[in-house]
View 1 (cartoon, rainbow, N blue to C red):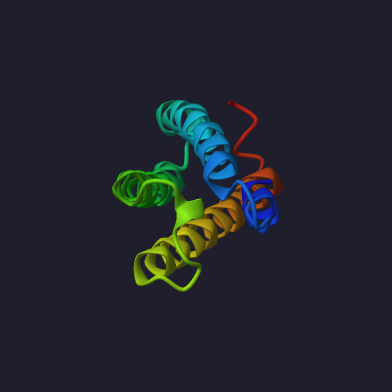
View 2 (view 1 turned 45 degrees about the vertical axis):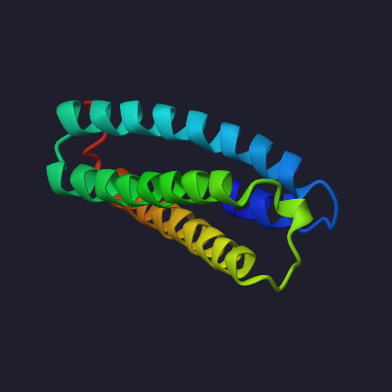
Length: 125
């Protein structure tokens, strides 16, 4: 959902600052839920390596989002910057990287889910 919502939501030409703030709040709540679910999976699941890989992917996302959040604070209102202004270009590229990392994590998690459903190892969780 996140990799579909972000590009669509932020494609608008107006109020990017407000929409980005809303998206950021949703994303940080998602990170908290995802962390506890992965922690639960790590503790109770049989596939420790899969859980650790998924947690590393989440950590990469959190780190990227944290950098974006701090960089955005230094930029101020993104709507006031020219679209081609170098700082805004950096922000946009790292934001696209963050979305790509989320997509990669999603695909990895779907692979792990399908692998475990076929093997039946989720029956105990």
